[in-house]
Image 1 (cartoon, rainbow, N blue to C red):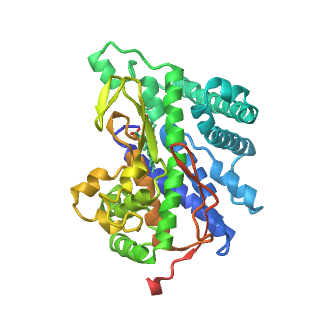
Image 2 (spheres, protein in one colour):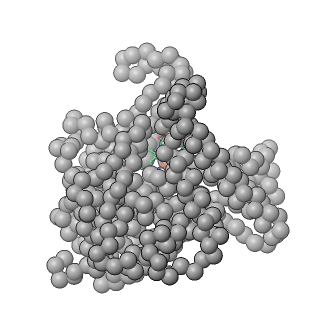
Image 3 (tube, rainbow, N blue to C red):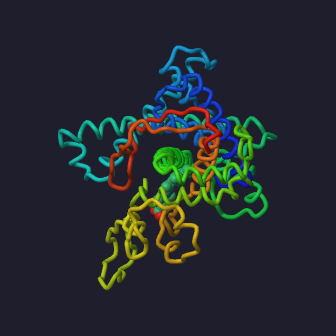
Length: 387
Ligand code: HEM
């Protein structure tokens, strides 16, 4: 994932997949109620798979085909079915995470209500793993058969790491072995899950808060119009993103209001003292980000949505805001997530007026995250006369 041109790939992929999704939306008509959560789920899955493996999945067109008989998609049915099989298993697997993570082995395997959830979760996890292993094996074969082709996605880099095809390894010969299929599987699976569910939820929250605050939308559009001028359709580039300063404050503030990965767990390897208490090794800590992001000691009117608070250089505000975790295990997809969030906000609100169908944000709070459900929007071409 950390290849030099990775950000450019992420920008291209966001632009291309967005264009495709926009074509589907437009064909469904102005008055169509878009299930934004479902579209975003599919958008983020198609995108993370493309940028980590270089292969495109087609969960977006499959969904479009379910909604209409219009013929916009020209992809063989077997390929579409394959994508649907994958997203179905991913969604089920993710929905059983809490049961698999929280309940001890005997409870989750033998307690009547949990037994079935566990069974489905394990079955879907095995199907997801099987699919990823198939992608890994195919790519190994492609690499072996193509001496000259340079593949520069995350999957290929993991496969060639510490082999003769790896430039760094070839030049310094460190005493390291290549990664096994299982190790690669773990990394790719974490990127698929980390890079789809969280981003989908974060984008929904962001769009919700912008729609609810017309004054924020006005400021945001001022910034967008300054950067993009009258070009409502110009794909964004990396340079645009670094100029989107106000947009970044809106992203931070919406995450502060409703963090979609609100806590993480940590275990101490050695005895330690925290807040005057002694903690033996292997104590489990739950780091509750929302506690810090809304603590009235640091935030004025913490329940008020006010992106301007991030405009100031207030060190206390900056130090107490947590979005992507911290320390050595902080989120490796931070940059990618910012590209997607800024890119989508810039593209959507530059061109369209967006209306929320429901006034409230529907979500389910889980042990460490929040899942947004059933967020419907309507879009129509932006009325430039009023903005
Ligand atoms: C708005 C979107 C996202 C948010 C809010 C988010 C948030 C987080 C948070 C809070 C953590 C835990 C960090 C810690 O323990 O200190 C994390 C971990 C992780 N994230 Fe993200 N993330 C997002 C997007 C992504 C993306 C796009 C990827 C794609 C690669 C990704 C991959 C991961 C992985 C693999 C981990 C586990 C890292 C580890 O345990 O070492 N995330 N993320």
